[in-house]
Structure formats: structure tokens, C-alpha cells
Length: 359
Image 1 (cartoon, rainbow, N blue to C red):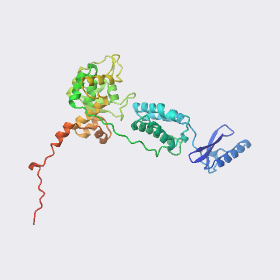
Image 2: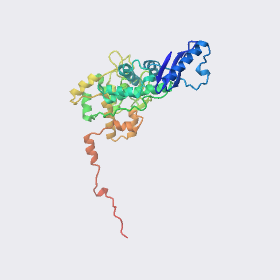
Image 3: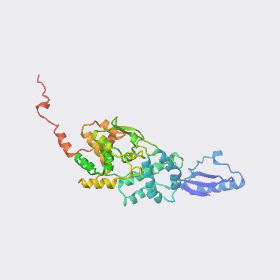
Image 4: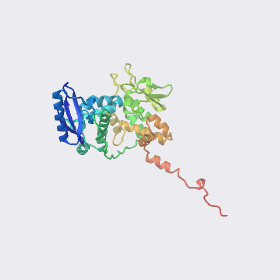
């Protein structure tokens, strides 16, 4: 039993004669809360106590006190698992366990304030970049919003906390010759996998989760299918046509007899990481700076658009929700820009007579 402060008001915390716990909002002064608690003790001792829900004394119930750690474990993580993709949920858990939970250790939800969050931002800026910190702040904001909806908080303390300004990383567009050289330098077991990234634009998780039943060589298409343990980013199925180069790469790709996955190791288990093999192949191909798997998805989007494929079709193949996202992925090569500028002409064949007839 005692009094405690919640934002701008004081609350009392006590147990009644039946052992039930109660919390009430009293007012803005600690003295009022202490006097109210003293009166409650007297009523409980004399048997005259009436639970707050059974009386109308104008006092609001105070939200239940719960620690940040308890709320994350009991409410937020189960909610996140059902609302987010597997990869996003894992990233949230990683950010919580590594940074947010240690920083807010021992804190209740009600003690989180804008000042406390701003201090977190300042400390993290010494060790992490702005993009990483913003992902952590986004996680914290989601937690506080859920706490408001669940009744643990009356207002979101992170509502007015601003995110940090991010400087977009410069992504170099791989030229067609570089991608061809990369495919030639790859070991046979990875040629089809990298070809699917370069010729179909699949995401990393989509590549590793691709099953043979999703590839239809007769119809010349592959499907990206969301499944229980391997959901797609938007949880939607999409179809991507196969060009001749990708069809040939898949035909030459060995199939593990006991594995449903197109890309699996010698034990039939799906691949999880090909970073080292891809880096070695890119070095042999003479590609400066190496190649990341997601960079091939950018290349697919950019080269499709530069080849004249309309943006809406590319959006469908990429699995984007909006054209804005597709255009963010798109880059143009210097050679393409030089060729494009030649389309701008002012010779006689493009002449428009703007003279005004004189009366």
C-alpha cells in the first residue's frame, strides 16, 4: 500500500479487506493522495469500505501498474508475432533484448517519459547510426501505442518524440555485364539461386523458401507463396514470368530428392546464407566493392524499367504496395541516361509553329 505519481497526478495503491488490489487517481498533490489513503485504511479496518467500482465518488481509476519488461513479454511480443512477418518480429526481439529492455530495466510503463526516450536517443547516437536508432524508436512507439489500447497508459509518452534524419545509403547499380560475369563465376549449386534474384527480383527470404511446386517451367512462371513459417512481406501470392536465361538456369539446377526446397544443401535443408560465396564470386568477377544479395533485386527493378517495362508491371513483379516504393528501388546507369538524353531534339521534325497570325 502506498502513493505514487503517474504523469501529472497522484494515485493510491492498496488492498481491501478481501485481498483485492485497487489503484485510484486522486489529484495533483501528494498530500491529497496521502490523506485519501489514510481514510481508505480507516474504512477498511472498520468494515465500511466500498470498492471504487461500486461507488460514485468522482475518483477515476488509475491504470494498472506494470513494468515495461512484463508488458513486452506478456502483451507486446505475442501481439507482434501475429501482426508482423517472421523476419520483422525477430528484428523487434533483437532490438528489445539488446538495447531497449536493458535501458528500461526496472522501469514501469507509466514512468516512461519523452525525456527518458530523448536520453536514449542521445546515448545510442554514440554507437549506432540513425537508421538503426529509428528502427528501435519505432519499436518503442508501437509498444506504447499498444499499452494505451490495452489500458495500461492514458496517453502515449512517445507521441511527440521525433525520429532522426536519415541519409539514404548510396546503392551502386550493377551493370548488365557485371551481373553476367558474376553468374559465370558462381559455383554450379548457386547459379540458379542468384539467377532468381537477378532475373526475378526475389527477396532473400523468398529465395530460400522457394519450393519446387512453386516453379512451373511449362507455363514459364514461378509463384511467391506465403506460408505459415515462411510468410511473404505482404502475405500475398504473386506470379513472376521466367525469361529464357532463368528457365535454363533452373533446368540445370540439381534437385535434392528428399527436399521440397529449390535451393537446399546436401542434407536437403534450405540455404540460410550465401554471403561469403557471393562475395568470393564477385571478387573473381572483378566487381569493385562486392555484391550483396539484395543489390540484385535493385538491379532487377532498375534494368526492367530501363528496358521499357512499364512501372506498374514492375511493381507487380517486385511485390510492392505502391509505385513510390518501386521508384525508390529504381536507378539508372550513366549509359542509359546518355542514350535517353538523345531523344530530346529541337530540329525541324519536332518544330511547332507558335507564330500568332496578324490581323
